[in-house]
Length: 293
Length: 347
Image (tube, rainbow over all chains, first blue to last red; front, side, top):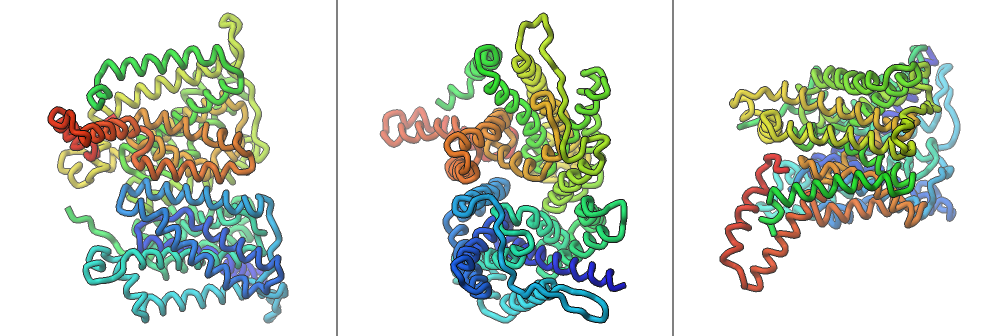
């Protein structure tokens, strides 16, 4: 039983990382209707900013805050400088533009820090808590806690502030928003900035575990994509629930089904996602879209 | 200029020139260049399949690399067990086609991103499966197989013979697909991409059309896997990674979606840009590739295939601004502009 809880908590903490990136993907999708493959690349670059500071002797918490700020600026600049040209055009071209950004950002990270992985200090003390015979690492608990805080903050932003209302309005209908006097282009920049800031949080949280390198988040991005699509792309809550589900089911299958083991465990959540989507194409929490002719 | 490009004879002449170059090139160039040329042919066929499902039919597919890998593994198994080469090739086409059809039977009910997700799952699940079933695949180390040596009567080196074989296969695939997308089925693809409701009202089943497009795409993916093994003589789980699929999608859009010429240009891009970037500076390949990719998208959002048309339009509008032949050029230009935005497959 204690082993089970440990596996569960580890799964939740992996899921929390996927959730942070999935939230970023949902944020961009809701404001621009794009799947942003560059999300991982932006996050890694912001995390490298934190890495540079940590190496210079800054405390990790301060470095995290700087990484978030860097991510925000980077996201806004990329939206304004690059993606603006592809918005409203052919969606395939726009998605490939984000792939181009991913390649480019990976190249920039490698330019400064090389391809080899570097160790990154953890935000949380490297200790385990013992709760009634169950050993749980502080890192897992910390990751989950940070995710919860981020989720609440996002919810407050979108539901209780004027900025959030404006962001939702632009996502819903950019033309009407512009006619009502909202600064649509600036709001789109803010949307991308927020998404990149979220990615930076995910990057700093996962870097101690994976070691920081330009391709660090490539694989996690795939999980996050799966979570975002499974949750129904327009639902932040759905993305988080789906991400936690994917993290937990992967760990459980790896730990308890002998045939699956550590190497095949990645297949389990993806097969589950495929089955769920075939039954429920709009995702777990998505709205069903009716096509009008 | 526009008229010149659309003339039948110019097109035939260009095709003949390309064929002559492709016949002569392997005879006069180094084994390394022949290897690159063969790789271009390999990925041109994989891109051709991707273009059928994504460019012509408008269904996002992020799983093309899985079929390429499957084809390569089947070919490797066939060679190691001494099957006749032709049988291997046929199975490399048939088995991925059947797998693709089974996936599509479930997936074609979905659209947009749900569909993208199911296709993402193919390479993601495929890689660990390939590692696990090492009796069939050789596991993580992969398999080295040697086949398709040049027969003695030809007097060719192995690399030349292999280049000719893959070029012939690619040529046949391109000719078949060109005829397919120009005919009744191609029109069905186009209308399903444009509007499924309209397709239905015209008696075209969107579901069946999508399943057909996926089946053709996976068949071509499998064939390109056979060609890949013939050229590279090695396959491993790396062949089918998700990153390959993503790069294939990028190459397809760069070349020009829903365009036969664009497919070939996309393959050129896919193989040559990393090589060129690596030659400029081997540790900056990603940086340079990313810059080139973005630059092409900025200048030519419709892909490299739109370059001649774009140039033609620039020269016509330039001439009109100078005011010399305004009257005679205007109708021509208007016609080409009216033809361009309609989603029908033009090339």
